[in-house]
Image (cartoon, rainbow, N blue to C red):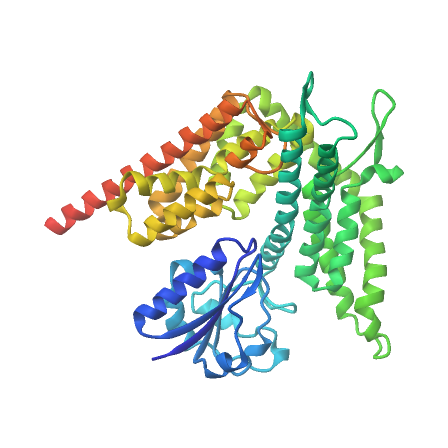
Length: 497
């Protein structure tokens, strides 16, 4: 009997983290082995590994898409991979972990990763001084930024929805919250939480690249990227004479966060005098790094990035009137493709950034598509239960619950088990829901999706919104069942032959 220990973590810390841990535990139990998995999710570290656990372990499996401190595993065989591998191929990971390279001293900074790559395992986010690819580093940094941003989006979005849904009054321009009311206070708090989204995204992208010294550089620079009206050089004059700030939204936050991270990382590598080194991370990098990156944005990058952001915004805005069906199909396919992954997040962020421009028309498309995958697969397990295992039927109940609250990740267990049939079904259902939302003229004024925002009054027309979700979910459910039945018949014919 072998003894394993592991860590699972994903950028959002909601679904992948715990599904990977569950798969590893189930696989070990079936093989007659022991495993203890520490989860580093959105609520913190659970089932934490002790010194005794580490000492007794034969191998260590790190299935994570976020940065994990490996220094405590020195002297152990450590296999580093992505969280998706923990879900899709846990048995293979356990086999490879027994022959993985032994981690040496704490100064090696993940030198085992090249061997893991050659073994066919996708590495998790490289260490601070990694030798991994730039593309992988940037992807992991982006996911780290998004994972820290999401709680601000959810908090702000739900509070705004509550204020509009409960305290709002119909006006000629839509819904307004009366001045001086309790619900206006809730609206202001939600708006403030929402305003932190951009600096948090930039700050944690920078921290993922340069560690803690990059945090302040990224956050301050990211705040400037979303506050152009405070800087004369980043303002423009409207036809009516009003001054308008050139804000660059999440595109600016991503770019400035990456620049801030690499500037801070470069400053860390300067051969500082030994008497200066103690103050580098707490004084020199925060002050000079922030000054360099912020001034670079204000005087060099701000206007070109604003032009890029405005160009994309205007392009999408034009599609809401000329090609709404095409835009809806694109948004629906992207939202449903990787169920909370980077493609999903790109569509989500684009739609959210359009709220101020089109009063939530594009966000309405995304909001209708977001819950379709989990609701559709949950319905499928109820409609034809014999096509699913008991574990999948149990996951179906959880998927239905997650779908109601706009958590697309609820469909991941089904996609991991049967991607060839589940992912296309999710994408078609999501596209149908988004197209119907566009045809019904659905608007969502908060940056969140699923039935929850409709219940709270953030979407209109409410009947069109729910109709789009229900029809999209039914398309996903029946398409997945049809594909599964076709696959089963094909397998039966092959067995008979």
